[in-house]
Image (cartoon, rainbow, N blue to C red):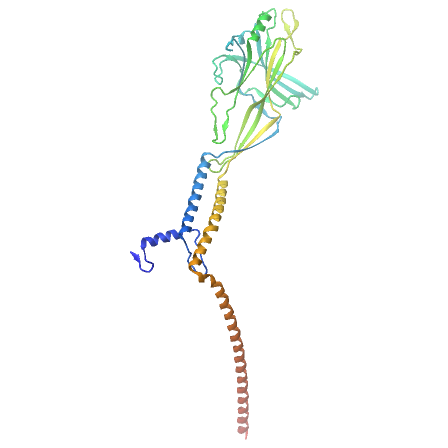
Length: 421
């Protein structure tokens, strides 16, 4: 059907009504009560909506699939009361062309590796530091976290009696750490050692290897742990130089991680920790400690054959990592800001275009304000004249009432005189 007044079909009328409804930049002239919409402003409104929806969808997809974290990192001094369990480790001397000969690790006629738990603490009675130690049993095995198909020495300890690190040497009240010392064979009446030339030749053809297991790392973008099942370890090797007592210090740095929620996929504040090797210090010396070993056959004393020592300790500071993500509130704010900027840019053009288009078709409409002003002036003058005329009429009415009152009084007096007569 067709509307006889507008000359358009019902379908076209409905379509025009819908397009007019979505026109964000429709112009409302005064005193016209119906908004003026143009084809160009409708296209602009649709373009604005499409652009904003595209940005909204893209930002939502990137928020849920790739919300890249921002890491704020700083350091704080080490808490000397903090006790950290030492990660799994292994140590052994490997020799041969391929460095795969490990059989000498169990042959004490050449050397021996001794593990100890050491504690240095401040003794109030003696007003000085005192050292105490416990032997650490080492066993030959093939650790599953190394997977190198060889046997090597690993410390054995009961569950709950882990190797521990705490404090700093001569800085904190207590300092504990594990250490491993390689001694060359010491001749006694109960032990026959290989010749010194054989020992020197063995050391020249091999190295002392140390392995330290890595803690699982975390991909903070996805929040998932990285697979560390095989070959995830630190490896260090050292040359043994006969006549020198070299030492190596492995420094672990403890870190704490605060992972904040994004309030869309996670709503809890998560805490975790890290432990990484950050430094290695080597000390070269030809001076060995003054420790003495006793020959059980003669009860005599003889110097110990120190060759190498390695130990671990904690770093002087703790790394604090704050992992922050964009939250859903941040996204809502960015959407609002983007909409505001986009709408302002489109409105400046399309509102002005609709206004100019309307006044071009209705040139007299622009003079409406001036006509209103003239009408107000005429109305004000007319009101003043009416007020003056009204005042004049009121004066005349008052005079007329006064004259009428005087006449009535005279007539009443005459009537009274005649009655008395």
